[in-house]
Image (tube, rainbow, N blue to C red; front, side, top):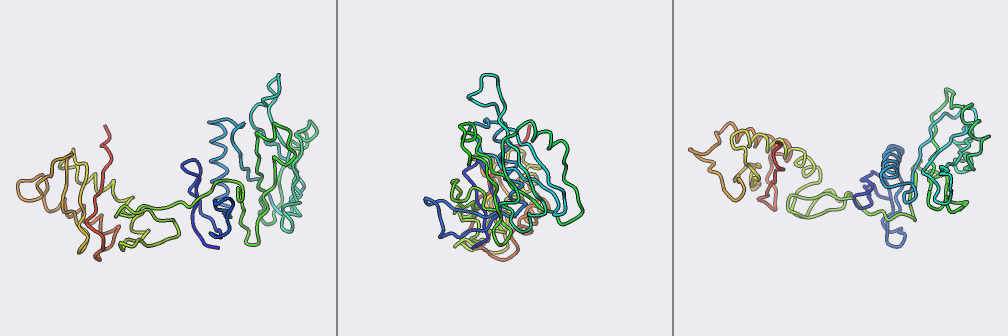
Length: 289
């Protein structure tokens, strides 16, 4: 198992996880998520369901309680059924035996129909207690639930490390990555590029670029890019306004203090040591109007 990040195109992620890169489903990864990532994933699936419809979206739900809480019932609702003439809303009831969650989460919760009795129990029973916090994670495949499948909603049991294999062996997870200054794309768990730039440097520079652009645009509002020399301590060697290269010497728009301030931001991100693979271009987004 390695620590990395995964995503599904631009739809889901990136999320921190652990996985075995050699253990795949049809070539796709099978990640195991910590609870914080599971919460983020849940929020993203719910936003997708609201935007695109529950009939084409799986959703993840995190139910929280305590180990000494009384049993509770939770109603989870989705979108309208495609097969109902009166606009019936799809829903399930999740019954949780909180005292069992520390031993056997997979069987501590069960998913059933959201009957009137279940809805009444959900209103009556709320999680309480003062014991250790526990969670139950529910995966609902609304399209198949609407077709009557009795396996469309399931409990995601944690593994031996307390991680949750959400969408593992089922969804098209792949490695999230990071872009190096040299233009190479690296998988998230690869901390160094062959050119010598580290992931931490690349991410720090990505956050620093807007500030560098602000500094340079104080004297030349049309700046679009800058060339950073890294053969020694990183410094700005060229600044352009579209296709025009600006004069960085006497008579140009910049004084020593302005360029020095921009260089200081670069060195705070990249450090002061030389970096191979340079020089590197920085592109600045259009200035806000």
